[in-house]
Image (cartoon, rainbow, N blue to C red; front, side, top):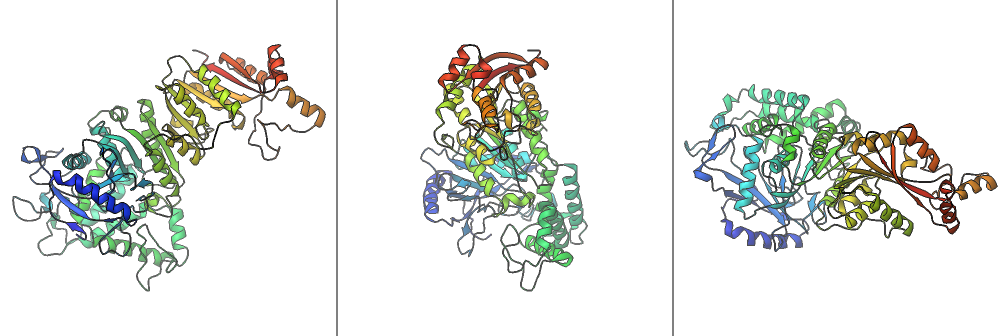
Length: 624
């Protein structure tokens, strides 16, 4: 294996080496890395697999990069996807370009910043890149395992990963991260070993495969098994492996990694000479053009030929078998019961154009975690290229920012500078309105998270989650140490289960909603109480503007021209109270906010709808 060190370092020697290697990597922005292989110390001399199989020897190939902190508390373990390997970032000595499969994410200043974190990635059990798998030597026979290699599961894979980390001297890690099949491993790791990782990131993944994805794998497996050189998996003796079947399996799988839109773009014109054609940055061979129907044939043939040079058919079947059979709920009860075991703070990322792992699968997982009362953030990112977008340097700008924000070790004050004095007063008043004993708050249309930051400052035991349609705002909430959901408030609150928060707040945003009545219904579905604030369109200065100028008013709170305002449902205090009365919504408490002396006089005289510039209303369900 290129770049591999076949020596087996002892655990006592690894951490000092890792730290010095990390310092060297920091000096080299290209992250020159090296593969190491270590033999695990097995309990009772064997590894007993979930399905009853036994392995007497287990070697694991792994790579590291970054700087290990003095307290050894900044390690991140990355689980690779179906056909990946330990070479997650940088280049091996002698490589002329970056060859790590996620070099665009794992690098100095990247989403997983190797100037801040120490990254470990290992090849999985059943693979063919240094970790024990079907092509490894069976110690009982002295020959490759072949068909004798026992079936492995995702539980077995993550058990080996944890044994590796412990043998390297870690009793916990800062985060476990994985995309696609790696995301399944990350989920299983945190469910099977609660508390070992403080944080967990799963990208373009799910708690199980869909029937459609499973069907593609079944067809790919059949292609391998029908190859004349398959011979039941025992094909190592003469060097004639089932490359035709493996090629077909890879081609079929590769189609699922790209969206229809991306393939249309890729094959709509001649791409030769215009730049990289796939996530590896590899150009087509000289004289080959990827255009139209012949181009698709050439492209898929090219992908298959690359794949068979580095992968083994038995390993492909072993790993896809583990993925096909995986269901997070197996062994732990229901999905909700499974996620209840997870103590790690979770980030779940879906990709809009992904039809291998649909965003709905990530939404289901997020809902289960919210129902279980877990700390979870959810982002569905625009990814027109499809499933493989998370690997493409040109496609992962938002993903880098989201991952970096989630991995922030010390909470940062939200972006946007100082909060205006009026907003600070509103925030302080809203904090006073929070229900007694509140433990969880959802801030709908949270913006950059300034209100969330104020709530967490005042109420240390309160867990806050912000929902916003703007990715930058949601990332700001992550950086402040709270949970975030990237969603359109008008249509996206369905991901949040009923009764999973103690209180929902909607600050200064009711007037921008397309369906404010629907949003209020959702607030009181999600929590028994809500706090709503909005600008009062019945204030005296607004009325005066209408009367004297005959034009739509512009104020500090409503500073927009009539043709570009986001405010589409302006109302008065009386309008809102009438609405609550009609819907039998209880008004628990009201706070009338003013900025002008004359306004305060009007409010003190009982002319609240005439004097208040804005209002905070605490509401509860009709049956509360």
